[in-house]
Length: 287
Image (tube, rainbow, N blue to C red; front, side, top):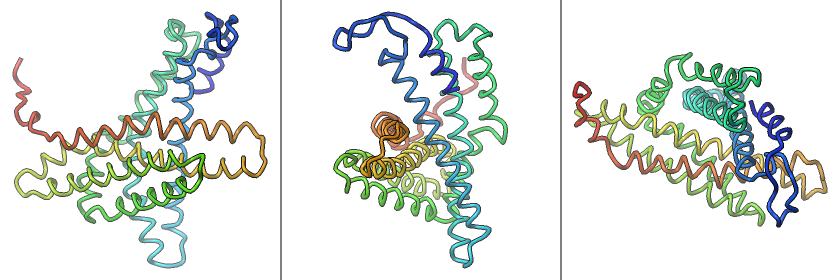
């Protein structure tokens, strides 16, 4: 989807660049609103892949590590990550494919371009292995409640370690601060869900109401974390003298993920803190 949209954007000529950048006739990839969409698609895809691979790595450790403690810790981590990877990745895939159609403009509806087919193909993914709401309930209802949030809390600790490492690099310090703030939001939302989810009377309703916002917040924070790790490696390569475009592009993707995309997810803390009274008052049978 990303390559498909990029190829079209680099080929489709429309308008002129701003006078400050030459004012000449240009392709739509030279317009910053289109660049925003292209970078959003790329950064999110990079982040989602990285989180899925990290989860797969934890499953390998859970099977192959020498000590019981290592295997148990890795399995607990993977158990928390699996519903996030399944649900968040597929929701984002639909939005990324939809953005690919948007890059094409009206041509996105023309079957020959293939953009609409990619969106149709992606749309089934949030339904395949139990709808994504079920995955969110698995996270907030089963995984979080059974260990009191210990496994997710350990992941949040790892996010803070990466944020601290980013703060240690002058060019990446602002990413570190933003990532730490996102981790704090996730910890606060988790604590609220644990508290209200354990209520003997209203706990099940609270978990149902909070599950999807909590998972979305976790997905944004953990994906931003993976891009923070990528930024550290890319900056190390650049500082070492590498002029490979790959590293510069990775730094752009990381900056977008942490400064442009993570704030969208952080808003989910406010959603959780707003409560769920409107759901109990809503009469679904009323017209």
